Image (cartoon, rainbow, N blue to C red):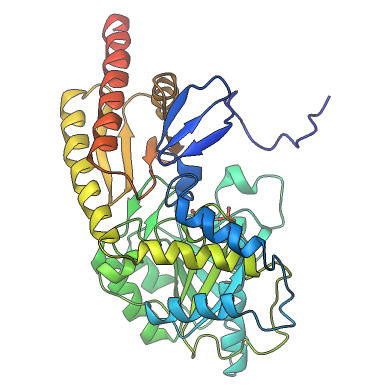
Length: 396
Ligand SMILES: *Cc1c(COP(=O)(O)O)cnc(C)c1O
């Protein structure tokens, strides 16, 4: 018999009663170090007092209000995102996939408005992930996500990640946009080289295509700058943001330049829930913390510490780990053993991580972690690798 919750997830038996900071607690009181963080979503950990206060205060005033009316909290969050990025304007939705939908609709509309309705195609990359709507799986193109859902949304041309010549060859008179994750998350913490992203900017400028960065996973401080591309630097025309932006409250955002958004006039796009007062109050509170004194430097510091320790683990356990990946607190360990084996052993030792593509485990902790938590994480990783190595040695 089918479960009441539609069985689309391969869930573990774990469930949690409460969370605090970087820890989750089950109903028996056992705690877990949370380096999954809702898949890079609980940006500031669990029940952060400042976020709890912001949510409660707004809940006493107004939860939801239609976008038929002005929403001051929404205007404030949009203005702050504009001030801190390349963007001139922001559309709010509730998820990453919705932000992607907005970005792709916007690119088509831009070309339609500027007299090129034939320009509707988008260049996308191997290993990409952009969400689970029909358009997003068509852009992502991974067989495990698309199988059985055909026909897919047309208009995507896929090239190898990092291959600028392939991009140059794929761009044509019908290309509307290039869509890329500056760091692939689900794909296995694969980092686009700075020169590659700068090359994409040039290709876009020469061809008139729009450049879209999907920072749904790598954005909002995770890599040590507010948005990852700002460290390169190279600017997109459009950017999608979600996961970390609400610190666990569902928010998606699509940021754009005035030029890219020129077709997005009244009536062109909408969302019932998008940008409602409750979500925006939390989003503003998240930004208060992330933009606060020392936050991003803290991410850089914790990231450096983690990376040095992870490098050492890779040297110590060559039969288990192949390499470390990542920037700031968006980290990955490429495994020699099946990544799901390591995730399971870590879980049995009280630490949560996320498997991803390319046989990598993702370490995407809350940005609030300090040296103590880093030390605990490394200790659990060390014990887990040792346990796996023992089994490995006796088996061979
Ligand atoms: C998670 C993710 C999405 C999809 O976000 P949802 O909120 O699940 O729709 C899109 N792009 C990237 C890069 C992601 O990591």
